[in-house]
Length: 120
Image (cartoon, rainbow, N blue to C red; front, side, top):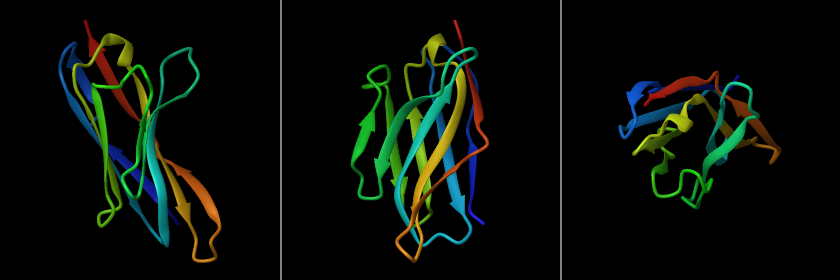
């Protein structure tokens, strides 16, 4: 059973920083990519940033230059460093992992979400 456990959310003032972590555990044969999504009240879930296990990254335009995603393959952990936070970054942030079984079958898992609130 694969689990993703997120941490690092909280309340911060505009302009501040937070670092989110997401650790994958369980029977994991391989990691293709890991990423972060967010969902604000009344809005659809949107992609924020992603990285392959090889370090190729992708960012939403709204966070480019402010957020940095990184991965520690040995720890099976992905991080999201969020700087210059804005009130519009307020959302529940979800971790997603694109994994690979020993039979080369790809599958996805989600974390439970962590709340990020940015006050103005």
